[in-house]
Length: 114
Image 1 (cartoon, rainbow, N blue to C red):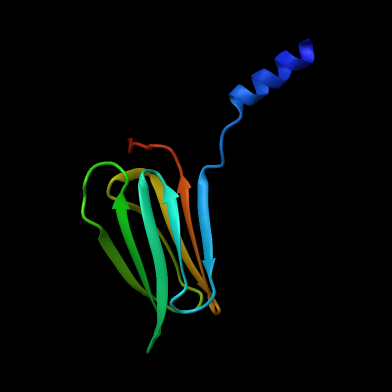
Image 2 (tube, rainbow, N blue to C red):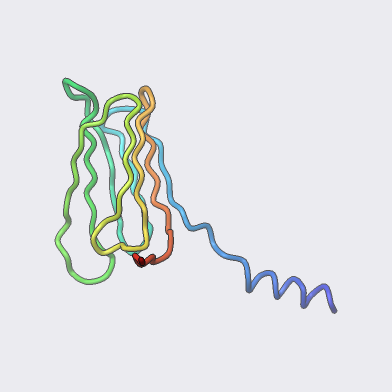
């Protein structure tokens, strides 16, 4: 019986995986991240000076029109930022060779302090 209580306690305290990630390895391939109340579809196309990365995102709550981010990424580039409407999620984009790796990590809401 103690074993059953222990398993129940562990099940209640276990936290879900709080990150979503994808790796794109070909132009015009795409995938969608679902983290922190936003859905973001990401793809890239080859450009003269690197990859033109495009992310189209929308909130799952409310009737908001989709918005878009675009950035040029060269081999070795990486960037991380937050998005409006998803204050507790850190989005990271990293290009390594022919691959683009994107993660959305739930970091919890953090406030600035002195």
